[in-house]
Amino acid sequence: MSSRLEHLNHWVAEVAHHTRPAAIHWCDGSDTENRMLIDQMLADGTLHLLNQDTHPGSTLHRSHPDDVARVEHLTYVCTTHHEDAGPNNHWMAPDEAHAEIDALFDGCMQGRTMYVIPYCMGPIDSPLSRCGVEITDSPYVVANMRIMTRMGAAALARIERDGTFVKGLHSIGELDPNRRCIMHFPEELTIKSYGSGYGGNALLGKKCHALRIASHQARSEGWLAEHMLILGIENPQGQTHYIAAAFPSACGKTNLAMLIPPEGYLRDGWKIWTIGDDICWMRPGPDGRLYAINPEAGFFGVAPGTSNKSNPNALASIQSNTIFTNVGVTADHQPWWEGIDNGQVPVTDWQGQPYDASMRPAAHPNSRFTVSAKQCPSYSAMSEDPHGVPISAIVFGGRRASLVPLVFEARDWTHGVLVGAAMGSETTAAATGAVGVMRRDPMAMKPFCGYNFADYFAHWLSFDTEGAKLPKVFHVNWFRKGDDGKFLWPGFGDNLRVLEWMLRRVEGHGGAVETPIGHLPIAHDINLEGVPLSDEAHAKLFGIDREAWQAEFASIGDYLAEYGPRLPQALLEEQRKIAAELA
Ligand code: OXD
Ligand code: MN
Image (cartoon, rainbow, N blue to C red; front, top):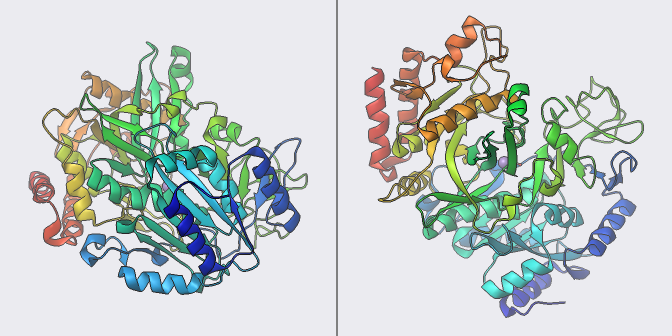
């Protein structure tokens, strides 16, 4: 097979010449093709069948133990000028980067099949969508891309219509951490990834295309590519507001996107609709509002901690047709992870060894499930709307054990951009490296912004134009801890109480007090019925410690200074203004 697009055929031939595969397979995305690949992977041990009575169509993949997370230290943005990548990215000159990674690709597919995957990020017929083609030697990547994107014949037809696509070349290579790197060439709309089969490094439509390359593209085309979930909140009157929320990896985006309203809210008729759990592309519409699509078609969610209590919708979604990666299994071959809380016990851990709690957890802390978004009980049909959904509020948040209150609202767009730019969070297992270390993670894009953060902040500020009807901006912290080290806020479904307050603010009738850091609800502005909070919890969730915030603003100032003269003046002025108010 080939395409009607000469430069696509030419690139495929060139890659084949370079990597020397035994065969080339153009993916059509059909069920037959999928079954063929799954059977082949079951036969060669890449996949293991799970219990087909309890989890029909589901399989387990165990990755190489050194290949379980994103590798930020091996991820590069290769722009002509170093300053265009910014201090927020590892950089290499494009020529040098091509030479280095091309040497790794040389002959690397010998004896393997090379798969050509045409995919579309976003609904096939949406003007907001963008396409790519990933070439890979991993059938596991093909099976995951089929769930995570609109992949195959329909995508190829759109690519042939558009004439352009992002080129992604991937090989698992030897899965050697010393021969691994992920390179982005935003000026060439090209990605090259070698030596890892892990989702964030290998499913090139996701982080590499939909965030790093797309953010770069979005800047020149006047839109935003963000690390955000999108959810719809339907009130008892039947009106639905859409919210986009940015949290760093493994900080509960999937849980928030699939939230189940607490008892009283359910009774009153509140409903939550899931559009996306990880990535959001937004663009101003003709009415001045921002319209968003989820470029993905599936969820690549963190398994540990997912339970009937924390996220019943996720659990319901993954009862069938799911690829599990690096979870444990029970005696009757059901998937198992820490926190699943279903009364079962694991017998085999994620490395395929007999489970021994003193050796390692049954599931890797970054073990995942890959499942079609359509299997989620709260899936919103608006996910397929080519125009996207209008966004009423943007929410930023991180894991902050101290300092940061439950919620506050930015005064205006510029302040909102500062709130996003100053975001901090404790690191998680989604990337290799130490866990629990507080780092600045602006807009949760630290690992994903394909260009200089200084320019990115300026791009955000540029949306505040005459006639723009921008969403209100909020900051939340579900992770505040008390003196005893325990979380002060129940989180999960109860987070709807906070979202409800935001929507009242959007509609112009929610109460709040003004403070230097933004508008804070007083506890009674939020419906806390049935949520017993201690005095300490009240004080910490709904108050600010001025002295500690002065220190925070000094630290934010130091952080922003790292971006030098490229940093937009308006952002610095905002930081100085608030620092002065706090003093
Ligand atoms: C993810 C991540 O997989 O952010 O979504 O690491
Ligand atoms: Mn993510």
